[in-house]
Image 1 (tube, rainbow, N blue to C red):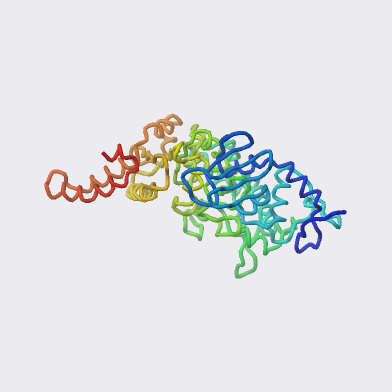
Image 2: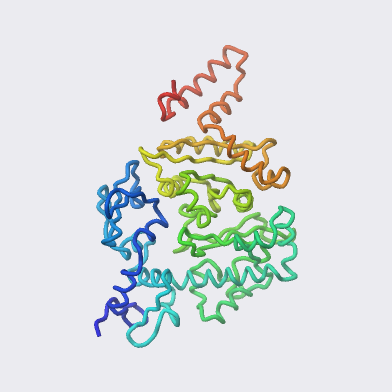
Length: 426
């Protein structure tokens, strides 16, 4: 029997027939489409912005009938396995296992074991499985008596049980190592739970990373749970930080993660528009109000890598320009965030906008006060980002005095010079 690649620690090998069957059963345009918006470019050709280097004109091509991709800009190319290895930074065997999971294909290793029974200890797929098991555990714990304050927190913000389930909300119980013991009983090893960011070494031995907190699962664009965001609920919580996140892991890189992207990616691609908000409950509020393109960064400011992710999904290039809408609080921090966003706007071929609610309310509060329609109206009334930034700068100067006008001019002229559209600069 022909055999293919070794799986490393287990000593078995993946048969060539399985490798070929998985490759043939995986549509490369669907796989790539989870990361890049593709559009038709002729017979057996689709194109989009390359996910492996920055570009403003698409040079990344996919040939569905041949099952291959190639970028004429950076030279990257290959089949479905090569794409997944490159974009997810995984080994060949892990790419095979990930695609097998994607199409519900059971790989039979030489020696008789299957992916349904066992995976390499510590492999990426094991960490994904651990996070999935943790999410199920947390979701069930949200129904416990101890989690009543967490459920009340959601109810007070007009999120019912159906909404909580839709976004996968959960609760981390109070036990020192409740989740850790649960996952160890399921066959995971502590080193895997530690590598996944679920457990950590405490003074009394292994312990859970999250305790007595409301949780949101953070998913990759491929829908896999890769981490969690946790909010403080109890006043006597010894961890004073309002929010905690999974630490940086093999799976979770906060500069490459957007909460809600798994739910929003299709509509972002379809509408060539993305709405960036500041928190988990803001994403929930927006989606429930019908603004299904909303996403939020997790534990870090919205940055260049986040922008690159959205550009690829929006197909933001020199020919079809995307639209990015930032929804900020109206306070000083929100204004500062708008200025920072303007600094990064040069990487966007399309135009950026900003939406700020009256009284500086965030989307969650605005929905509570005024209903779903208010959020839709907020997005519809967006202001060009450059205009908002310049008006904000002008507000810091006394325009009734000659000195103030000169000072304002000196500050705003460089801003105006950075507006990409020459007709707007004029």
